[in-house]
Image (cartoon, rainbow, N blue to C red; front, side):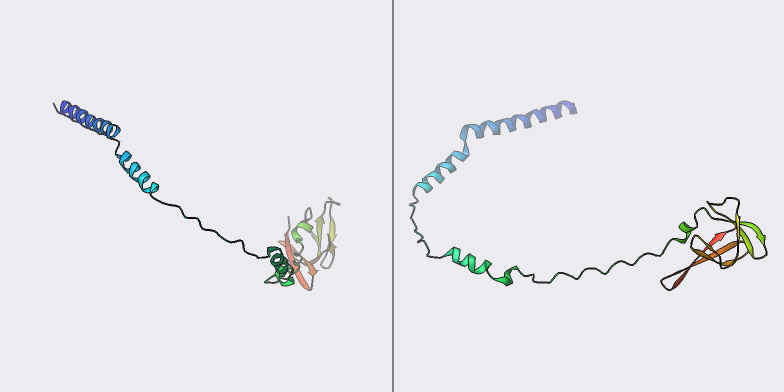
Length: 160
């Protein structure tokens, strides 16, 4: 029952919309407005306005403006160049790549294995390996130092 009522109501609304569309096609309500606009435009009389040619010398003006030196100068001077970047400190770990401090020790000398000598060589405090000076030796690590631009850079290498 409700379905029939909804279908009938939808059909009535659809017929109403179709009726409005047909009415507008037949009566054409905009035709009257377009005719009125055409009549009003036909009543307008154009008037001609003459603009006299000015006797301006554009070429002379252009030369006077572009000939000024101040025109081509910067309003704000360019900034000074940046200061040179400081050289980063050397990577001490990279210098010690392949170097191994062993647990072998005779007095204050510790055995180091290097890529050039895998059997090992004994070094003590003050000796240099790959440009780094041995600063101190403990049972757990060896401390290396490098003088760089008035600073002492240090790193530790664990003993195995």
